[in-house]
Length: 84
Image (cartoon, rainbow, N blue to C red):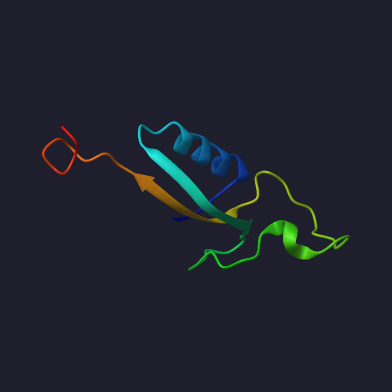
């Protein structure tokens, strides 16, 4: 999954994933500031810039490019391979 939003929106999305009625395992989460629309989420994570390097002013309202790699598990309905 890939989307753009603020840090708070990303946190809200992840919280909603934990409240789903099916099991979701987040395997990878990548995000960075994104002033322009993106076509992929290949940007480095913000914390990978190096020690002491200035990042400029940022806020929780900055737009982020977010990529989530997750596995979603569902239980098959009765008659579709589910144990009886």
